[in-house]
Image (cartoon, rainbow over all chains, first blue to last red; front, side, top):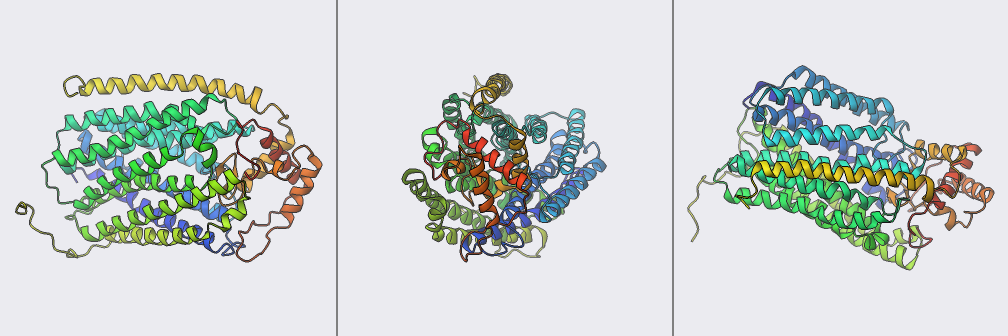
Length: 449
Length: 150
């Protein structure tokens, strides 16, 4: 840690990990209700649990992004954060808002647009927090050195905050409501968040591999260009069946197919940089998460996204467990794993210790990634059967769901592995052990034959 | 690629191209907005009852179990075409009665079956919800869903 104010990130990461714990436990509970539907049904209905599961995810990912920005911008700009006090104020607003939202969900007060259920005062709180953040980080960057990484990160953050305005716009006309709702949901995760992801990934690879900055930054611009060129009109793949014109079927199919490209490039970027880089960075777990994130994002967002994005396919698969499979792997790979990569990289420095507990951290990577992959496979099988029975044959929804119960049981098992992995991850970062579980080998082993 | 594509060229392509696609997207959005109002949802007036129904739909977060036009939680049946499925799309009074009967019979309490909570709604709320679902059902959704099963 070169700059004192980077310490702000520590508290953001702590808050993010606490919510991460709540999120996966909420998911486990929802997964159990699929297996045993009467569980808690009178006390805590499924819709409230799901709201907590999705909202906690979104907020902790944002907390992670904010924390990552407060960590990496000082290093890039070569100066302290403009106002650490404002950064803490922003965090307090976000934590109070989050607790307020969860509390009001539990007593049945919530909005009804999916993922945007927060009460109005919480939405305003998020807006204020975002504005504080933008002011704080922009002032830091403007006063200091400008790099491609801070450019792209700032642009992503500015645009995603601007798009939040659409969380306040809820037309009475359902089709218009849906169209503008996607301005937040799609243009976050399939456009502006990709800018943030690519910038953080570029920072990590720069630090971990020691590859020349010019090379990293050129890659970064190419990646984010392909992300926006495909992602903006790719919004059309959500506009097929909600009452919008038919031309979106062509626009959406073509451009969302191109959405695979930025994820393929990010994966290639990560591997090429590691291949070219000569630095033997001691934080191997951060490297594993960085490579893992870009790889799983390619499969989850890229491949599983393409699987059902063409309108001829989506006509049958829309709104089935196929969507759930894609959603889980895409979020995990692109945004969860990337956040965990920057946590893993930054935490030892923020706590002023050498990288520790690499083995437990890496074990948590395989547990979570394995669990998520298994969950994705079983939900894909469930979704394929559901698509055939319900959309092709025409069997009713509830009958079809009953025949999928074996998949939901397996999904619960996969979810349990993810939860154990998540708790292990949090433990490995927070509880410091004196020694490694497995002693590391020499830094430069003798080359093989 | 290395010589031709310098960092500043890559940056300029990124900024220029993004603005180009944003402009196209905004143009298509404006057209789509008009299309929704004038064509795809114009088959039935956006009455006070429909708007009330949308609020009832939101306050009870139906979307976090059900799906509507395929978007939602996939835990409970698709409702974008539920009025057609029930055969009451063209009969507002039957739509109200059927929906009221359904809501008031929940939760079923059947062991091993997904439970819909009991929502205490007034008749006006239920009538609004029925109108909202009929309104959604008449929207031109490009032929989706493929069949009445939703």
